Amino acid sequence: MASKTKLGLHLPTDPRWIDLTKISLEDILTDHAYCEQKAATACISLIQQYPDKIRMVRELAPIVTEEWGHFRQVLRLMEEKGCTLGRQRKDEYVNKMMHFIKKDGSRDGRLVERLLLCALIEARSAERFRLLSIGLEDQGMKSFYHDFMVSEAGHYRMFLDLAYHYGNEEKVKTRWQEILNYEAEVINGLEVRGDRMH
Image 1 (cartoon, rainbow, N blue to C red):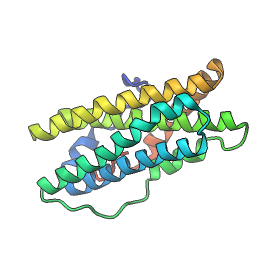
Image 2: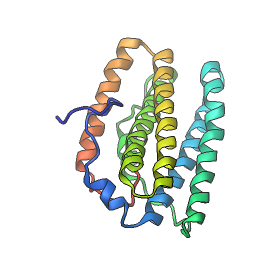
Image 3: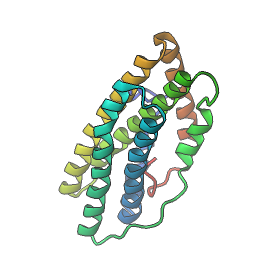
Image 4: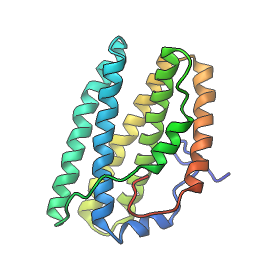
């Protein structure tokens, strides 16, 4: 297995990805915009389904605002670059990961699964934002993606901490490694495309 990233991911992104993103700026920005929108929606869904989880509600409420703000930031950048928002595409990466997430078991168990999935997506996003922050030529965009990287890394840590808070520590630790292993298989099996954030 390839060496882990600083975010704990078991397989780093293929180096070709950053070069492919440069081919169509509009496509990668469109995908990024929808990813931010879906992140806000995911947090809203968790709050709606688990309003009794006081710590989670308190920590996710500002993330909803932040993620929607990120969506607006991407739209503003697209406008500055003369790009337009395209259609939302099927997210093969997330769909494959969702198949691995357990949907049976206790209510708290299902919550932990969802929190771990959110942590994983944020970790992979942070890793890719880092690649954009060092691989793009445009200095403004490098700075733009550096800020996003820092934000997503913080979200990754928050979701993981919440999973440990609401689950059994040893079980969460084991399950997290299972999810990371599966995600590496998914990444390895997906086509490397520059119009996809994941």
